[in-house]
Amino acid sequence: MSQAQYDEVINAPHKATLSHELLGGAAAFEAVKAYEDHQAKNGKPDSHALAKELFAAFAGAAVDRLIETKGLDAVDSYKAKQHAKQETERLYAERYEN
Image 1 (cartoon, helix red, strand yellow):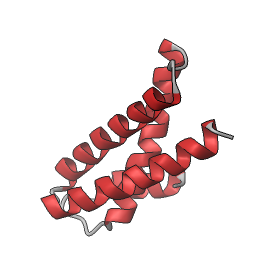
Image 2 (cartoon, rainbow, N blue to C red; image 1 turned 135 degrees about the vertical axis):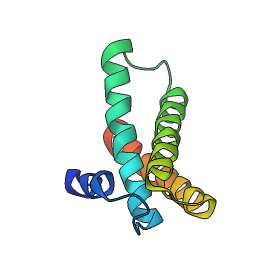
Image 3 (tube, rainbow, N blue to C red; image 1 turned 60 degrees about the vertical axis):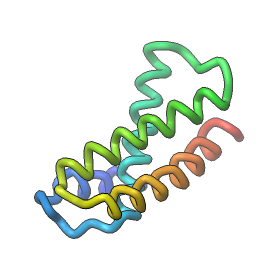
Image 4 (cartoon, rainbow, N blue to C red; image 1 turned 180 degrees about the horizontal axis):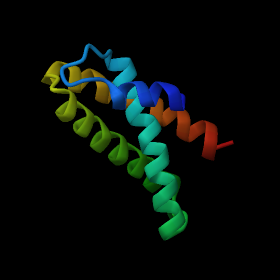
């Protein structure tokens, strides 16, 4: 997920036609930023498991906020959360497990 794709989701009008992949990717991008902010304030988590839980929580919150602000339905929310989970796992592995 790039900054441009994230901006596309954030700047889309209410009730926009956004794919769950785009929403999930934007949520994952936002989760990475939130995790990095959290880490800067609180230090590194004690374990990878806790770090992954934080990533998932940040992504879930981002999806909920995006779904609410874009006026989308429960199906979109479920699909976006699933995609965000996949993306956050991938991003976590890329950035912190290598």
